[in-house]
Image (cartoon, helix red, strand yellow):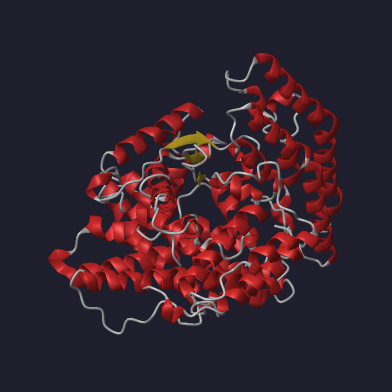
Length: 596
C-alpha cells in the first residue's frame, strides 16, 4: 500500500465511537496486510493483487514499518471501556500484535531474507502453485508474476549483500544445499520446472490455441530471462555469500543477539519465559518421556538397552517402505481411519477438505519430515498435508500415525480450517497464526491419538513418544545452541541419544533450529499450556467435563496468544460451573502483557 493510499485510509478513520473505530482499524489492518504482502492475499483468496510480489526494496520495507507505527499510534487512542467483551478481545489482540511487530523493528530481520528453510527459492513456486488457474485471465496473472520475478530476485540479493556487509547471515554450515535448491527451479526442460507447472496442466475451458500462446510466452520468458536470473543468484550464493557467511552457529553471537533471541522466544511462544527457564522445562520433559519410552521397550520384550532399541528402529527393514507411493498410501489410510473417529472428540468439524501430497522434489532433501499448507474456501483450494518421500530409509512407519494426527486431523487442518470458517470473528483474526497456539495444538493433538484408536502397536506408541520427545529435545537444544554455548555437534548427539528419529532427520532439524531461532520452542510450550488448561477443567468440572465442548471452546475463537487463551478458557470453565481462583487478566489494559 503506497503512502498516498495509506494516508487517505488513515484520514478516513472515525474520530469518535470506539466500536466504529475498532472495526475501521481492523478493516484497514487486514487490507494493509493483503496489499502489502500479495503472496498472503493469494493464499487467502483475497482478489486484486495476483500480479504482484511483496516490495522487498529498502524503501518498501521502511514504508511498511512507518505505516505499522502509525497504525499502532492510532490504536492507542481508543476508549476500551466503551467496547463489548468480544470487541475488547479484538482490540487487545490488534494492539498486542502491532506492538510486538514494532518492537521487532529494532532488529535487522530483513537482512536475513534467505536460508535453506525459507526464502524466495521456497516461496515463489509455492505461491505460483496456489494461484487460481481457471481462466485465461488467471494465467495472465501468473505470467505477470513470472515477469516480475527478476526484480524480486535482485531485491533479495541486495538485502543479502547488506546483511553480509554487517556480518549478519545464517550459519555457513546450514547453507550447503541452497545453491541446489535455486538451480532445481531452472532445469533445462521447462516442463520440469516448478515455476511453469501451471502451464502444462491447463483446464480444457481455455481454448487450445490460447493455451499454446500462454505456454509459449511463459517458456520464452523462462528460457531467455528467468534461467539466467536464477543462475546468477545461485552463483552469487556460491561465490560470495556462502564463503563469507558466519561460521558461528549461536544466534546470540550476532550484534545485540541476546536481546534479539529473547525477543524471538517471546514472539514465538507468546509467553515471558526466558531461554534458561525453557531449557530447564525441556530437561524435565526429556526425563519424563524417557521413562515412558523405557517402559515401552520393556513391554516389547526387546533384549537390549535404549541405544540398541533405537538402532533397531532406525535400521530394521520392517519399518520402511521401498517405494514412495506405498508410503503416501499408508498416510492416506491412517487419515481416513482418523476421520471416522473425530465426532467423539469434537462437536464442530471443518467443512474444508484436505489432501496428502509428497513434498516437491526441488526442496525435499533439506526439508523437514512434513508440513501443512492451509487451504482457502475463498480461493477454492483444499488444505494439504505434505509428506517427505526423500530417502525412504529415513521415513519409518512407526512415526506415521503421530505425524498424520499432527499435520492433518485433528491437528493443523482441523484447527486452521475451523478458524477460517469462524464467520463471527474478523478476517484479521480468522487467519492469524500464533505459533505457540497453532503448533501447541498440533502437538497436543498427537496425544489424542489414543482416543482415536491409534498407537495400538507398541512400535507406533513408541513413535508417538519419539515425537513428544522430539519437541522436548527442541527446548533443550535450541536454547542450548543459542543461549548456553552448545555446539551443533553437541546438539545432534543429544538428539540422537534421546530419540529414535533417523540421523538425516535429526541433522535437518538441528539446522532448522539454527536458521529459525526460537520457532521450535513454541510446540512443547504450547502443548504444555493446553494440557494444563485441560487438567484444570477436568479437575474443576469433574463429571460435568465434556471433551467435545472443551475442544470446541478451545478452538472457537481461532488462534490466540497463550496468555489470552488461558484467560478465555478460565472464563469458559467458570461458565460451566467451575471455580477458578486467582485468575489473572490475559492482557492488561495497555495490551503489553507477555511481550516484555
